[in-house]
Image (cartoon, rainbow, N blue to C red; front, side, top):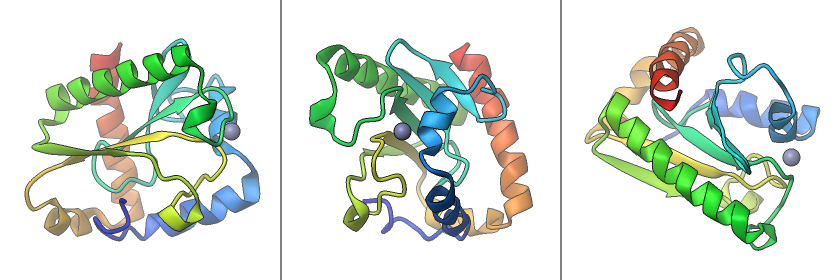
Length: 160
Ligand SMILES: [Zn+2]
């Protein structure tokens, strides 16, 4: 779903790291380094984090704490909490970044472009008219890091 939006060179690094280090989402779920991991909110059944290798500025992921590989494995309470958290996240993105639209979705399976195959998570990608032309400007990893820190600080203020 998202691969057609735009190509991001840093995603190659991400996919390589993922193969080497096991489930990064479980590691982040169990970590207390929320600032370092760009975690914005911990809800009852899921957490919200900035994607370190984003498709666009403000690309968030809503991740259940539980390591589940299908939506059907989620309990009802988890589904409700996840959808409420997705909705809250979109509201907060609107407040901070004022996007003109969103892509919201789940990549299931390698064929669909899932980087982390066995731990489902929901992507929220803010979109602006013409952003496919804008993003190559920050295709530099260092500038991306600064942009991530800045976006994290701004969003954290609203999520808190
Ligand atoms: Zn996991």
